Amino acid sequence: MTAFGRFLLGLPRFLRERMSPAQAEAILVDRLAHRAANFLTLVRRGVVEHPQSPYRALLAEARCEYGDLERMIADHGLEPTLRQLHDAGVHLTFEEFKGRTPIVRNGREIPCTADDFSNPTHRRYFAVGSGGTTGPSRRARMDLMAMRGRMPHRVMF
Picture 1 (cartoon, rainbow, N blue to C red):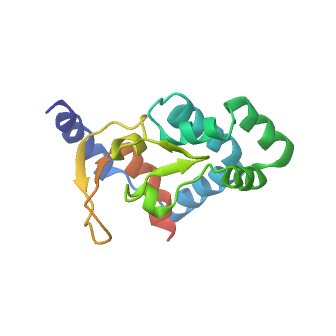
Picture 2: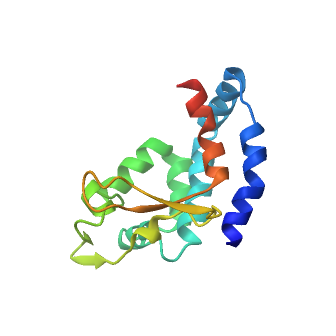
C-alpha cells in the first residue's frame, strides 16, 4: 500500500512532464558522451552494492573486481572492456536470463531468482507481468524514475 501510495503521489508530476525532441537529443548526447562513467556507476550501484546480483557472481567467477573494471575502461575503453568481460563469461544468454537454464560458469552454478535482476536503486511502485509468450510469465517492478529515464528514447524514436 505504501509503494502504491508513492506511485499515486508521483503520477501527476510524471504525467505533467513534457520533453521536446531537442531536450531528448541533448540528454542522449550527454549519456553517450559519459557512457563509461555511467556504466561504472551502474555497476557500482546495481552490482557491487547489490549482493544478490547474478552479475556480481559472474564478475567474481571471472576474478574481476570493481577496481579492475575502472582500470580496464581507463586503459582500453568501454567497448573492449565489455568484449573482454563477455569472453570471460560475464554475460547471460536469453535462456539464463529467463530462468529456463541455470547460469553455469567454470562448472559452478550461480543461483538466482527473477528478483535478483531488479535494479535495487529503483522504487518499486507496482509489479507487472510479462505476456509469457516465450515461456513462463515474469514479474517486473515498475518505477516512475525508470520510466522517466526511458523518455528521451521514446521521444526520439
